[in-house]
Image (cartoon, rainbow, N blue to C red; front, side, top):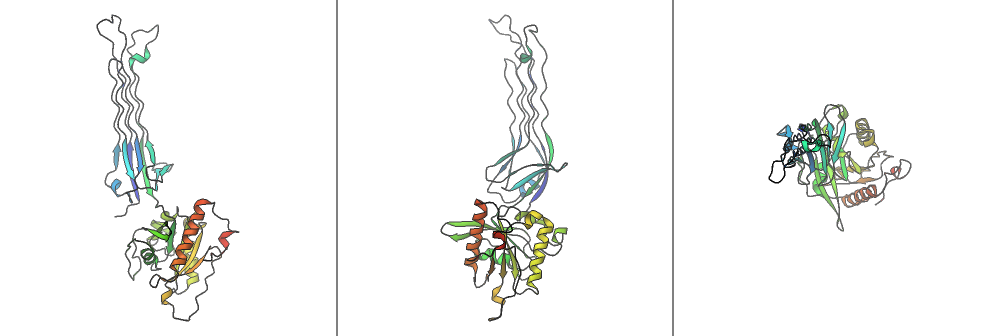
Length: 344
């Protein structure tokens, strides 16, 4: 089961209270105050775990609480600090405050840590309040309360290239052909119900991650179809591949719809560099000319067939080159590389 959004409540540990105590031992006739400080409460921490791919584990339980700090003790002994509550999440998890919508942070790489609720400070014992004029203080402090929050966790898959297209454009078949991923493939719309990731081998020890999301339909940004639920998963990609099947009634109109939906969902996503991929070339009758599709903002145009493997080598090489360029450089401006066709 793929879960990419959960709401949880977290409570950090309360700090331990300081102690009120006095020394009473042989050889120390004027002992004085000896109450130790309380321990600090535990934090609630998110840790990115590369072995996880969904937020399913957190969906079974809503409340998480860190351990409170121990109280201080006599003989100036400080209480033990409370243990942190460590929640493991997949890399790419974004955290927001559910009540205010405030962005708290995100964990991107395996091992990243993010403190989402800080534990309370331990209270001071009476030994801390001793002065030259107050030799036997009986004052001590209670520990501070830990932070309490309601959080919304949202997973955004981390991939180099995102596949975008209408249902049955050939995205899942392409992913299965060029990677070891095995998404469900069938001849009816909405076969893909959840995003899929695959690692593509471009040769010479070069690899990149390819993401396939459910098909985009007209009005997806308003909640129609399935793809709108997962458009967030291509927001991190370095480049997009817009798939338009050659058996479409109007390839130009289909390409324009995809661009319109991306722009309506996120202006930033609409500016992500993209290429045009004309898929299902095996369905074109031999000798028939390819349909003209005007895509001036695309950095490349490819004609492929996942069945016959036509054009796949050029497509994989082009996507790898573009992903590496985006990784090492700033995104190109519209009047530069975005308006040029990539030539394999």
